[in-house]
Image (tube, rainbow, N blue to C red; front, side, top):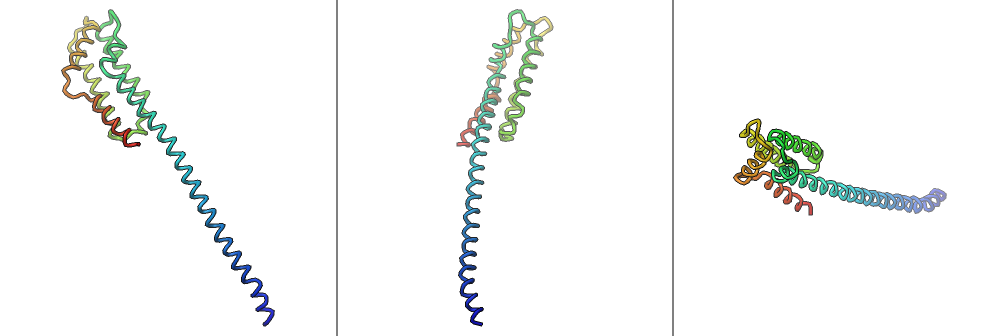
Amino acid sequence: MNNFYLILACTLPAIIVATAVVFVINVFFKEARLRRTEELKADSRKITLNLQLQAYERITLFIERIAIQQLVMRLSLPGMAGLQLQWEILKTINEEFEHNFSQQIYLSPELWDLVRIAKESVIRQVNMSASALNELSTGEELARLLLEAKMNQETDYLRDALIFLKKEVRLLF
């Protein structure tokens, strides 16, 4: 029996120390894993934030580029037919939209809806102004009609989309 107590007296402290060491090591590794996970999340947030900001910049540029004044200045050429200018404007709007279509994954659904509504309002405005023309009308006539319609417009969907976009960006900071 004395041998049993002697063996127990020698091994019990070793077992207690080994158990404590295993517990401390487990706690240490668990904390290290949590720190690493938090670091990875922080890095991921930085990358995502940069991508979001780039998306907001691209959508801002898209909105500015499809403004009637910008389209007329960029696409209207001397001697251009009205229907040809209409076609060029519509083609440009759709190409710009398709080029930025993937940005919607970084925007809120509400903002993306406003961007789509703004695009559709510009297309509607172009088509309505062009419907007042005849086949022989010039691009200058369409440009004049578009700018007049823009000035008489009650709701500026492009401006509304930009305002909402700016509010959304401010929420990121």
